[in-house]
Length: 74
Image (cartoon, rainbow, N blue to C red; front, side, top):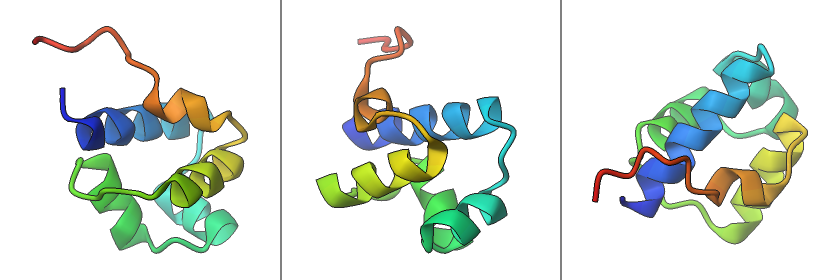
């Protein structure tokens, strides 16, 4: 699986599990809702700093954003 897709899927799942909207994450993190939407769709290639900041906004470890989720078909 493409790492961008994995990060996007993990981010979206964790955000929903926390009961947060993209707009709420935008307010917490400073990243635009458009950026977050693109990230969730696997269209962004975030830096390690961005991963760390997004994880902080979600209240999770940055490792949670890159952890394989078992849905890799390859």
